[in-house]
Amino acid sequence: MEQWREQAVEKAAAPKKSGALVTGASSGIGEAISRMLCEQGYQVYGIGRDFSRQKPMPAEFRPICCDVTDADALCRAVGQIRKEAAIEVLVNNAGCGYYGLHEELNAAKIKAMVRTNLEAPLVLSSLLLRDLKRTEGYIINICSVTARAFNPHGCAYGATKAGLLSFSQSLFEEARKYGVKVVSILPDMTATELYRNADFAADGEPRARLEPMEVAEAVRFAISRRDGMVCTELALKPQLHRIARKKIKKCKNM
Ligand SMILES: NC(=O)c1ccc[n+]([C@@H]2O[C@H](COP(=O)([O-])OP(=O)(O)OC[C@H]3O[C@@H](n4cnc5c(N)ncnc54)[C@H](OP(=O)(O)O)[C@@H]3O)[C@@H](O)[C@H]2O)c1
Image (tube, rainbow, N blue to C red):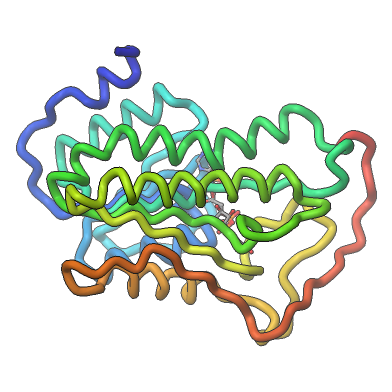
């Protein structure tokens, strides 16, 4: 067994609290989900790289600085959390997006998307699956409507989300008999900073965009179903299909 897996799978002390682990908790959708889970009574461990711009969070929120693309750091963080809490909810939310013609994406950006959006959820799910079988808990994967669409100018991003959706569906079939629930949330354009690298953003018109808290509400809905009924997939779309174009300088090999 690889060293990174051994370290995190090693037996932890008896867990004390109902824990939730949320990646990408420092902003946007992950921050909203973290707030909602704190309100629901979970001790929330939020992973991100930079919490400096975050508004004050509830006392149940514990920020953990960690790059999810660093598997060793992720294992160490999970090992620490497992000593304190029984993880009942894992939310794989951290993500990044680079858009444009595929020939204009460089390898570093493709790698960042694959590792953040797909590899990290696979690694974290593997690390925590035994705990989640014990707690009969939830894995919530924040996919995207792009997982089911053709995505010109977002081929690689959409591919990572389609991969995450496929993983969710298979993992549920593998783990459902142990009580584990795997839920895919597929949001459309949401008003966050995700499009910082794009020449478009969510439209200002409220009927053409989702708010992060609406995605958090979908997660709340999924984790509050009666025992024995699993909501495996939720697609969320604004009423209007519209995006706002930004005027940005185009660079070669973006
Ligand atoms: N906004 C939308 O329209 C939309 C639609 C569908 C799906 N989604 C998905 O929703 C998820 C959340 O995105 P968002 O819209 O809330 O955008 P966001 O505000 O940019 O949030 C992304 C989060 O991921 C974290 N993150 C990124 N790379 C990381 C890394 N290597 N290690 C640790 N944390 C990392 C960021 O934290 P740090 O910068 O602190 O590391 C941040 O907290 C993503 O998976 C995205 O694909 C968004």
